[in-house]
Length: 111
Ligand SMILES: [Zn+2]
Ligand SMILES: [Zn+2]
Image (cartoon, rainbow, N blue to C red; front, side):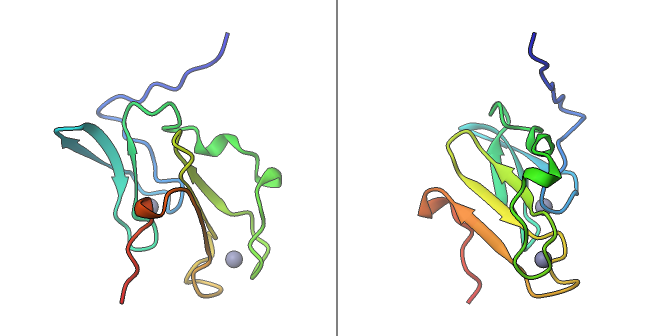
C-alpha cells in the first residue's frame, strides 16, 4: 500500500526552497499553500497530491548547482510547474534558479 502524507490545517508544509512554513491562502478557488519569500514566490493547491512530497527526491538524484555543486532544492506541482533553487543562494553566490512550466506561473521579475 502506498504511504500518503496527510497535511492538516495546523500542519502546513514547509517550503522546500527555504524550509520556512508555507502560508495557507483561502480563496474562492479553494485553499492554497504559498511561500512569498522573495526567492521562492511559489504556490500550490492544498489538495495537490504533490504537497509535502518534495523531500522524496534523494539528494544524490537531484541536479547540482553549477556554481557550488550543492544538490538543488526542488519544488513541483502536478501541473508540471517546477522550480529548483540552490540552498546556498545569497550565501556562497548570487541566486541560481531553474524554472519549468507555463510562463504565466513564473514569479514576476523585479525591475
Ligand atoms: Zn520559501
Ligand atoms: Zn549553488
